[in-house]
Image (tube, rainbow, N blue to C red; front, top):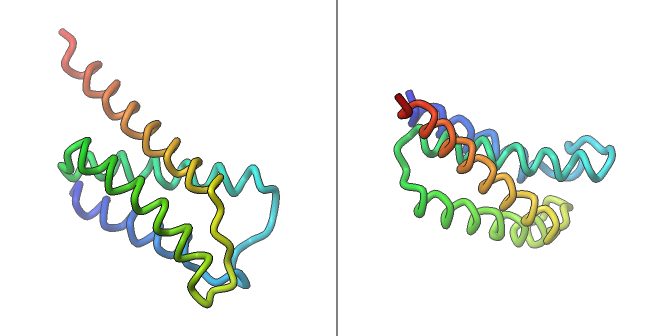
Length: 110
């Protein structure tokens, strides 16, 4: 179940991050950063539920954040890479891993 959830969130992230600009809803830039943060938090939480180690997941997701921004600026999808998006992604990774860690501690307390 954990692997399927992680695969689904990865698929959603690919759609969100690589949809051409014409298909991306416009709005407040703050909401864009929130979407980035929540998306990468979901990747971190689902990745842990799939059994990926914290270290591998953190390194992989932060790399994915950076690479996705580079690809957005270089692929012919009319999107711009943004360092602030990558920072929001990284905040999401940290948030997701902290939430999972706190949840694990709460479950193991007698």
